[in-house]
Amino acid sequence: RIADDTAHVRGKVGRRQSSTGEQVIAPFFYAQFLSNLPPSFRSSNLSIFQSIFLVMSLSLLKTADGSHSLHRDDMGEGYHSTQGAVSEALHVYIRPNLLEKISSCVPSQPINLFEMGFGTGLNALLTLLESEREGIDIRYTTVEMYPLSSELYTALNYAETCCSIAGFQEYLSLASRWFLSLHEAAWGEWCSITPHFAIKKLQMDICTLDFPENSFDCVYYDAFAPQFQPDLWTVDLF
Image 1: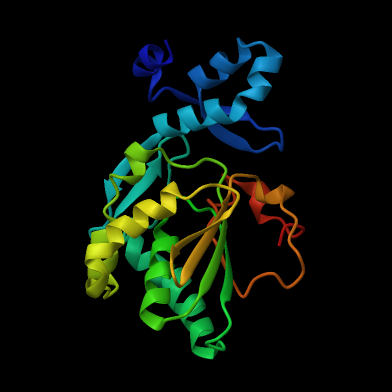
Image 2 (image 1 turned 30 degrees about the vertical axis):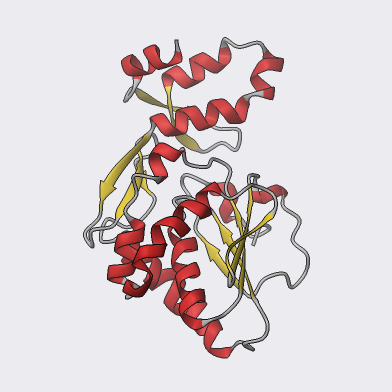
């Protein structure tokens, strides 16, 4: 029944007031659908419904450097710059952050890295590729409330574009498998993708995450813009 109705209502969006007071865009059908559910059933299955409607609102697009990105149609916001998803990741996260840390780290000690927003897995794949090329061990912790479906992440062309744009051609035959392994890794536990790279994915709200002091050497803070996720841009959280 959900599949039948979504074909009719997809694209019909309207503004509503969130619990924090900001204006956000939400599908009419989503709000109506949830309001008609018994409260106990709604609360116990909310994450499932949110994931379903997130998939409904995502569009695949190709950015200027040839790499894919996703667009949140309900927000009117993309996951990456339209000028290039891979190019943006290299410019914002990898070169000024990870590579600087690698240049100054002790080779025998792993780099502990935290990412807010696993999203498409692009930052994780680029970081994994750098760990292999540099022979540096990286322990990668990432938070994501709404993981992508396999239909979405298998459509992304990051294995090819990361290797061509970022100069990892020697790993082209392995990059596709590594990218899938990042998405398919179990949640809530450490998973070794390569001998140099281990990932721990947490499906939870970062606002409820307890960070031990001095936990991480690098941070990728990859949230949506403040007008869409104001709770993730507060002084207290930082």
